Length: 343
Ligand code: UD1
Image 1 (spheres, rainbow, N blue to C red):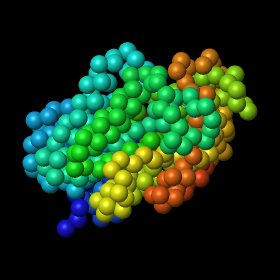
Image 2 (image 1 turned 180 degrees about the horizontal axis):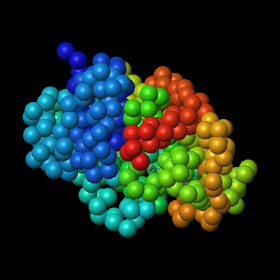
Image 3 (image 1 turned 90 degrees about the vertical axis):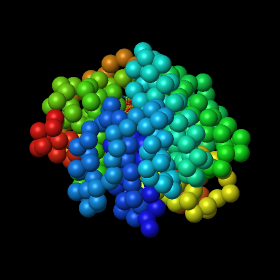
Image 4 (image 1 turned 45 degrees about the vertical axis):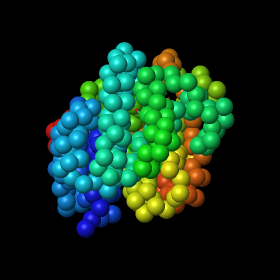
């Protein structure tokens, strides 16, 4: 019998790529998503890659009774919890929506896990918990800094909720994955990032500008204390990132560690500036990108990149794709969307 994994937020960007890797590793996947920030079309894209259609229920994780019914319907071996609101700016304007969505969802899952004998949960966290690091690269022992947005705060609080629950003796394990900046798409271009409206994140803005949906990219600041003055990030390929989730699930289900809560940074270990990333895009797309330098974006971190040694050595996971391959995959996906008339 294949092990069955519940993937919340499984029609979203990172979730859908993880579903593909789980299926390819032999897991049966049940996706739940409220489709508030994703599209059910991805349920067609996934089987075009894997040959298997994941089970899907349109469900909101904050709805405790509906979640309970789901746990009754399916025995799950493990959970990967992606479902969350993630727009930093919106979280400042509508904090309660963020606290309700992101905190209640996790509390519901944790409450149901022991009742239905589900032993492990992988939690989707972010390097945002480190704030502006004192030094780079940054490892998992670096201090968690006060959050600069309600969104960031929900990631920190959720990490604490998991630790407190496990500490109370709950019979579960958890692996917390702190992502750096996930970008790119599946190399098949069957699935990828689908931002609704104007993209807030850099790479979808770049590819949409490249294809003509947006006129010009604004680069937020070139007066930072970095070699070229633009911000530095650790851009991690989304398929590489997805593979780390499969390893994390296996690690929990096969009890490869005695630790009840483990935290891993998921990044490449390489810091790349915004302007350097634009150059990579121009190289792989073969066309110049229309951009201009504007003022800094409020709340941006100057520079952050991962020390991924713990994930490399303990999980046996490593980012493999080059930045050129990754940007080429993002570009191919953008072109595919154009062909399909989706954008
Ligand atoms: C942000 C959040 C992070 C969250 C992630 C996922 C912060 C500090 N970080 O990451 O917590 O997990 O989004 O959504 O809010 N940029 C431009 N022009 C653009 C867009 C971005 O120059 O049009 C620059 C930004 O200033 C930044 C870099 O590109 O320096 C990356 O931005 P973005 O893709 O939004 O990611 P983060 O801000 O790093």
